[in-house]
Each structure stands twice: as structure tokens, then as C-alpha cells.
Image (cartoon, rainbow, N blue to C red; front, side, top):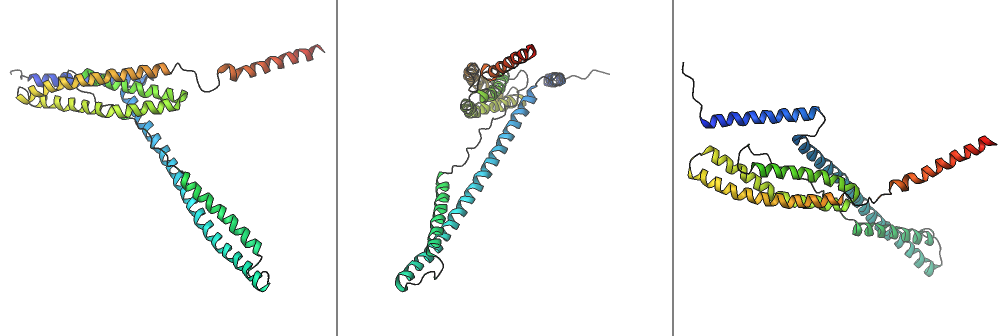
Amino acid sequence: MGRSKREPGDFAQIVEQGIHVGLEAVDGVRAALGQPTAAGRVRAMERQNKRAQALHQRALGRYRRRLARARKQRTVGTSVAAVTGTLGLLDLVIQGVSSASGVFGPAWLWCSTAVVSGLVAAGGVRTLRRAEPPQPPTLALAPPAPLPLGACGYAEVARFSKVRVKLNDVAAAVNRLQPDAAVELRRADREAAVPLNALAERLALLHQIAKDLPGSPAAAASADSAKVVAERLADGCLRYEELLAAAARLLAAPDQARSTDEVLGPAVASMVAYAHGLQKASQI
């Protein structure tokens, strides 16, 4: 029996599948050793997005309940102030005309209730004017899907995914030092990741065209376009790395919280004084 011949494309596909299986095995070993894998980091970013969305929903719920209480306070306070103020005014008018007192009750009671109710309504109006809705969270976009090994732009997409994951890790550390800087860092990442993710998607589409139509003019044009897109993505990765370097330098900034000496120094002094007191007491 003759040995069946394989097409070069079939052989390349087999090699690519083998490499993919090998990478999955490496990720499995890293996960078994407790080391973070690429897929694990992406899932961590997704979990972080879900937590941020949940916190935003809770803050939005508190904001809506606060508005509902303020509207109720304004409505009830205005209504009570109008009714009691009218009764108090009528009582005062009747007292002035007929010298009869307490037709609807003590006038001072109605007037006092009207004043208090007016203050309550004014507090509700002030709350409605000053209340601001919570800002929506800055969600981190997931890195793009990796390109097949050997595809034009494979290195650039892998580099982009790696630097984005690292930037997300650094942003979490910066948040403990300077929350405002972390918000700005995530905002910049969010805005810059959208066009660069689009470039990675174009590279995947161009690679698919070249793979499905080998030797055609469309394949040649796709290869030329992929080179241009890969260069643009490499430029974007360079700017990302500069942002990552600036964020890494920020990690060396002093902590806003009290230093270790400020926290532990008084405790050490107290322990020394306590031990000295025990020594003196034992000598008596």
C-alpha cells in the first residue's frame, strides 16, 4: 500500500496543533506549581471587572435610595408645612378678630410644626441638588486572542497581551499607594487598548484570509497589509511599555499611610518601658 501524501498546509496545521497542546501542557504545569498562567491572568482581569461592576451597582443603589428619601422628605415636609402653616395663620387671624384662642389648637404649635417641616423640606431639596451619581467603573479590556505561531504579527500581539497584563498588575499595586494615579492609569489603559485590540483583530482576519486563499492576490495583499498593521501595533506596544515603566517608578513613591517606624515605634517603646518596669519591680 502506498503512503498517503500530506499537503504542506496539513503538515503546518498538525505542527500548530502540537504547539498549542504543548503550550496548554506548560500552562497546566505552571498552574500545578501555583504560578500564574496567561489564561489565569485574563480570568483574573475578568473577575476584577465583575467586582468593579458589582461595587458600582451597590453604589448606584445607595444613590437611588438616597434620592428617593430626599424626594419623600421634600414632598412630605412641604405638605406638612403648608397645612400646619395655614392652620397656624388662620388661628392667628381668628384670635386677632374675635379674641378667641385655640380654635384649631395652639397657634404656636402649628407655626412651630410648619417651621420644622419647612426645614425638613429644605434639607431634602439641598440633598437633591448636591447628590451626584457614582462614576462608572473603569473596566479593563481583556487582551486579544493570540495569533497562530508563525503568523505575521504573532510576536507583536503576544507582546501587547503581556504588557497589558503586567500593567493591570501594576495598577492594582499603585491603587494601594495612590488611588487617583491608579484610576488615571486604568483610564489610559482602557482608552489605548481599544484601538490596539482592533489592530490585533485585523491581524487575525488578515492571517485567516492568507490562510484560506493561498497564492491568490488577496493573500498577497493581506500579507502586505499585515506587515503595516504589525508595525503600528509594535509602536503602540512601545508606548505601553513607556507607561508601564512610569507606573513601575511610581511604586517607589512613599506610602500615604504611616510608615513602619511610626506604627511599630510606639509599641516597641511601650514594650521596653514595660520590661524595664518589671525589672524594677523584681528588685524591690
